[in-house]
Figure 1 (cartoon, one colour):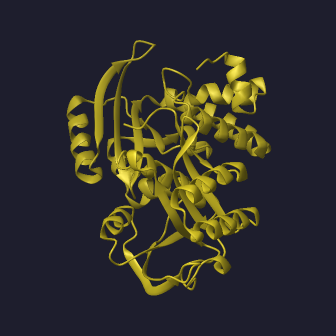
Figure 2: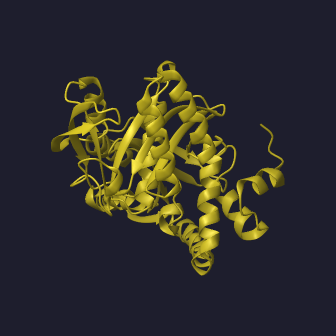
Length: 348
């Protein structure tokens, strides 16, 4: 289980200085001093991005995305304006195999997607079969080419380069689920589906879909039918279906499930409600959409605030929800996590 204090972030120059000095002392190899100089220069020049996973303020894993052909050996078909070359995957030994790097990798891919990159590549030595299996699990299944690389001290190594194409940003992934995988079409058999929440407002901060279905005559038999459909088409890792009595004394039906798309976990919540209730939810979403459309700074603040709450394990139905974030930004003028923490007097 990943420790709740673990965070993923883009490294600062000061953090890189500490990390590289540690590596130089640990490895006692002339290559590392040159690699440090190059890595620092590339980040300063915005030719690369360093990503760190930190636990209790200590860096325990890392990865780098190179964005400039001029800093990558054998760069043809490996780096361009839509393709980033990934390297320097490292995890401290005692934290290996516990999910820390996987979380950092997903953070890095999402950040690159948000920056407009559509594919990624990496290199691995042909005899490094253990790491190759990990990379293939992460989706690097296309062999781009094979070549040789030269270390600063003159050592020559063989390298196979693999690619992972069509990485999608969060909204593109959501649309892929809804339309390419035909979730909306399948749900239409049970009533008229309505997208609500962050996907409707383009305020997504994590992989979550909220769908309301117009259906005042849902039954346990239909729930069983939909359960079969979801199990067969999405192979969920978690699934729940239930009947509830809402705050107004009305019977409502819920189905929720989680599944993996391209090695990323997605959550889908489906509610079967009456038309009036859905219209009320849509009106709420439309009001928020209008406000953020008129001021892009509000959209950015909302998404970042959600992300910061997620990092701190404070974003859930029993702590702080999207409605709390929208109210904080749009009604209270709270624009960052520190202001949020101070306003709500959150202690850790």
